[in-house]
Structure formats: C-alpha cells, structure tokens
Amino acid sequence: MKAKNCLIFGGSGQIGRNLIRKLTKNGYKVTVVTRNIHQKSYIIKTQANAGYIDVVEANIFEEDKIRTLFKKADVCVNLIGILFEQRKGNTFKNIHTVFPALLAKLCKESNLKHFIHLSALGINDAIDSNYARSKLEGEKEILKYFPLSVILRPSIVFSQDDQLTTNFMTLMNRLPLFPLYYNGRTKFAPIHCSDLTDIIYYVISNNVYSKIIECAGPEIITFKELLQRLLKLINKKRILLPFPLPIAKLSAKFFEILPKPIITMDQLRLLKYDNIPSGRYKTNSEIGIPSKRHFNDEVKKYCYMWREGGQFSTEKYSSNDDRENSIN
Image (cartoon, one colour):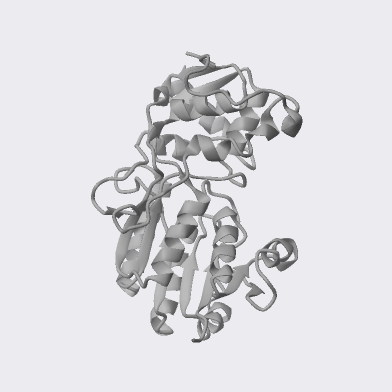
C-alpha cells in the first residue's frame, strides 16, 4: 500500500518534531515547510530516516509556491501559532486567521483527504483577547472552506522543549518571588507533547473527520498549583506573590516591549479564563485516545537541569506530602 504523504507547517517546534518521529516511524512520508532551511533543517532532518522526510523552504504566504506542495500530499497539518505579536507581519490575524484560511482553501482545491489544525482551549469565552479572537476566526474560516477539517484545541502543552515549564523554572531559579495573576486561580489541563502527537496520529490513521476536539491532560491544576509543583520539583523556596490587577497591567505593559516578553497585556486578559474542557465538544478521552502522561511524572524527567548540581544533584524529588515550598 502506498504510504500517505503528510505536509506539515510548523514542524520545527516541540509538537512538530514529536509528530515527525511518530508519523515516519509508522511508515508515513513527511514534507516539512520552514521559512529558514539553513537554521531549521539540521533539527528537522534528524527526526526521521532518510527517504521519509523532505524539508522545503518557503514563506508561508507564498501561495503559488505552497500550492505545488499540495499536489503530492494526502494530509496537511498546521501547527503554526504565536503567543505574542511581533512586527514584520507576525500578527495574530495573519498567523491564526489568514494563513489557516489559505491552507483550508488549498486543501479543498487539491482534494486532500485530511486537514488537521491546531487551535487552543478556552477561546470561546476569552472574548477580550486578541489571541483568542484570531484563533476563533481562523477556525470559522477553515470550516467554511474545508468542512472535513479536524480542529484540535489543546490546553497548555508541556515537555522538555517547551516554553512553559522551562521558562518558569528558569525564572524561579533566578527570582526571589514570582507573581500570581488573578491569585493563581486560573485552571489548566496540561497535556504532554507526546500525548498530543498521539492524538494527531490517531486522527490521521483512523480517518477522523469533521470534528472539533478538546485535548486535555489527565488532571486539572490551577496556575498556583502548577508553580508550587515546579518549585517542589526543583527544590526551591520562593514567594508566590498575588499581584493586584493594576500592578499586573503595569508589569505586562513593561514586559511586552521586550523582544521575548514574559507576559503581555493580551496574555494577562487570557489568564482570566480557565483553560480546561468546556463540555461543548468531545475530548480526546471521549474519542478513545486519553492522555496518559501526568505533569509531575514527566517534568521530573528533566527538572534536574534547574536543581543545585544539575544532573549530579543528590537531592531527592519531593512528593506532595513533603514540606510546603512556597510562601503565600
């Protein structure tokens, strides 16, 4: 049987690299589009054996060049997204709305069997967030042009290559206190990167169509609990300080002028809303692919890099019954 060809946008990120390994290991051929082949190809090409992966350099808005890639594809997967806006065209609207709509049109034009798009949980309720609105508009455009699309809405995704747990542990290593926005009450259902790629592979290999699927990890934890767990894992004591909203806004306005902001005003607005399954759509568990990897168990595998002594640390991992590691 002829192997399916998967066209992936956003293949150099944590989810993309895991997905490439998963697909090629199971006999799929992959074409990965990157905007800078000299910077990214050495990372991408190591994710699969020769003959199973092609890397193509293209600007994602070069419609004519991208169109040619769809001619030999059976499946298109879009993993591209941004957490904050930048200059030179990297706006929420361009990345989360205009580009996905273009891919959906090209999927329809080329009669592709599958289009899988990565969106985000909580976007229906976060009406005052530009990020959420752009994601929601992108979903509407996709379903308008390609109703067979599968839209995956994950909660926060974590792994040793993420920008979430690794950044938090770095900051908590350096700072004597850490801000708690909205008193740390926002709820998340963290999903490990490998669980998310298992879901994507399940959708492709089992021919799942025309669905919005909410992707959640096996447990729900608050923002405060997430930070407390990370502190225990790296054996640190830090002050978790609730920030009044005016001070939180002031800090966000300052941070968002940095090249890689810790938090922006839009992210602050987004943090008001829980990032857990809404009940409006089926979850990954309900379609038969539950998440298996728990937050503490997985972060424990790489948190040693932020502990005293690193991989040679003699300190033991602290269980939930150990001493409290934060001051409120």
